[in-house]
Length: 184
Image (cartoon, rainbow, N blue to C red; front, side, top):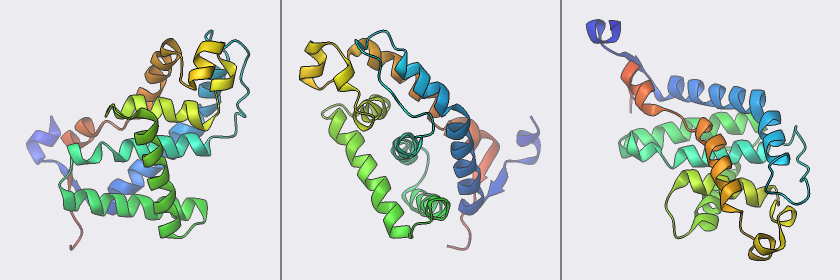
C-alpha cells in the first residue's frame, strides 16, 4: 500500500545484487543439509546415495546459474548486464576468485543446465537434472534408469519441487523496488 502512495523504493544494481547474493547464500547455507537428506532418502533410489551435507557449492552454482536464466524476463538488456556483473563480482569475492574465473564457472553451470536438459528449455527441469548430474546420482537408481543415465521421472518431479524454492521471485521484489541504474 505504501509503495503505491509513495512510489517504489529505488535501488541500484549494487544494492539489488547485495540482497540477491546474501539471500541466496543464506538460503543455501541454511537448507542444503535438508536438500541432501531429501535426495538421499528418496524412495526411487535402489541404493542410498551419499551427499556430504556440507558439499553445497555445486548446488549453489546450479541455483545461481538457473536464476540467471530468468533475468531477461524481468530486466532490460542493460539492467541484466549490470546486475549480473555485480552479482558475479560479489560471488567472486565470496569464493576468493577473480571476476573472470567466477564468470567462467557460472557459464559452465549454465551450459550444464542447458546440456542436460536439451531440447527442453525449462530451466527448473534443467536445474534438477544438473543436480542429478553433479552429484552423480544415476548409479543409485534401478538398472533401467542407471543405464539411460537419466533421472527417474518420479524423482525428478520431486526434485523440481525442491528446486522451485530457490528461484528468486522477481515479480514480488519488483513490485516493491524499482531498478535505478547507478550513473551508467
